[in-house]
Image (cartoon, rainbow, N blue to C red; front, side):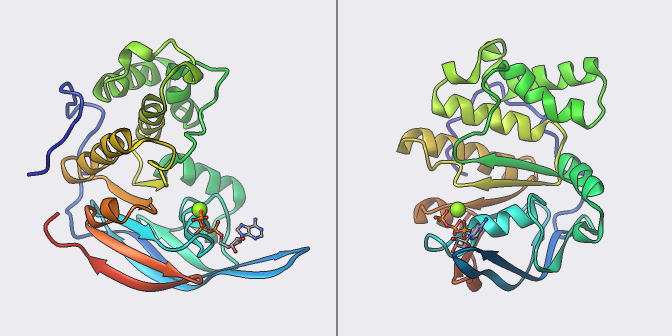
Length: 253
Ligand SMILES: Nc1ncnc2c1ncn2[C@@H]1O[C@H](COP(=O)(O)OP(=O)(O)OP(=O)(O)O)[C@@H](O)[C@H]1O
Ligand SMILES: [Mg+2]
């Protein structure tokens, strides 16, 4: 068993188990190429990327700076369109849809965690967490109930009325995790979620993600520069110059 340094009150309430079996495919990336044409020239950021991710798998993405990790995550998260190729989530071909349908899919299916938290600093923690639920059309009472529950589960219920800027980095990242869980996403994407944190706090956040994956069956794709954290995930995909160089299953996790 892994040692987890997590709030004792984490429960199976908001952070619900994935209902499907563990061997079904939640994400399929097919022939994804991304070319940036800018004033400074043409950059092939991704070249014919193909892979699938099973439900409940915790995947790390590694590779040198500029190799295309964030570009790939942004395409999986439908924040950007590929130049060619497609991404399917739960069998929905995302880029066959129009922009407003893509926005809806992103809101319903994807939870995103960023290195710099990306919280709305003028709003309280509670409002930050509720926002994706409100956008999804949930009633205020249901959004309130869910936000309360998920904040409790992540051990930050006492911070609900605070502004994010008054919280530590680790607490802000917990708020971001709470926000990403509120709509019960099919996939959680994390771009260097421990990159701004000290080693101990970064390990706590990683342990929380690992718990979400292993205990609650969440599918997680995490970009990291930390080889030790990557080795503690189920699978590591190494990208080099926009292509998959290695794709390995990590034993003993
Ligand atoms: N909007 C953009 N316009 C032009 N080029 C871009 C754009 N976004 C990314 N790139 C280029 O695409 C390549 C991949 O960038 P990306 O941000 O995906 O790298 P990364 O692997 O996430 O790097 P890091 O580890 O530094 O975060 C780089 O050469 C980058 O300069
Ligand atoms: Mg990046």
